[in-house]
Length: 385
Image (tube, rainbow, N blue to C red; front, side, top):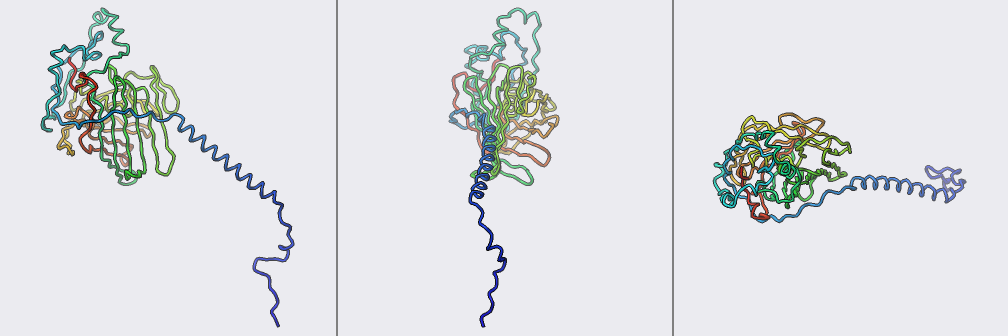
């Protein structure tokens, strides 16, 4: 006798009696899902659009044609008084006569050990008020922007490459590059950092400053900072220097402090200050200028710690070590810098630090590359006092 039929597991007789759902319910469910997905895609797209609404400035293009050579720094200029009217700083090329300009050629190559000399110089002393009042026309000319080419005290366009080490929840490795570009009075300073393998870095950051070269140093007009994570979104911060005001990354406007620098331009401003003797390189010396970071401004100070010889691919290189004399607040980054007199006081080592356990250490990877001079006046030398 055949066994009785049994229902399949999970099947009930009443299930066979259910009426199929109308197809329009399924259509509504699919439509609702598409609408929800479309809303999310639009929201993300709007978010991306706001992030990308102000693209990073295009890179200034300058051909690098030669390697820098280690050279003995020129002797420090004699102590000089500031010229409030027709300042030698505002017209360095015109201040020197033809014979004097011809005699101020590039310093000759020398051994690295001879580059350990510093650049002590007396601080400028203001001229008497009566003398300053004697030539108002010249004073106006000195204060107004000039279309003349910048003086010979500015380094030529230069590219420095670095090996990156450091710590971020463990040891990290990578590479970095600093590009100092100038065309006429315009400049651009780029600091690019990549953590991880070069073909697929985990984190990249570009810090870019652009503006103009003035008789009083670098005058930034815009600073941009972009961070990209391999599996995340990019983050952008932009600071605008707008005459008497600065606009921070949040959009807040604050009164600008005279001579303010940004996170990238500060390094070449230091180079310029020491290269021209406007600041003395002496242990214990404090160098001050306003520093405008994306979230806030600081009355920043660097302390000159002293001389250190660094081992580099170019050989032992005497440097001056500078360190912030005060900590930053709110998670802002700080930087220590080693400037090499034999390489026009450019930074051959940088430590950018968030805290004791989070930092990157950039060490010169090889000889820096430089562009050809734009004109005869671009030959690197000290301006005449």
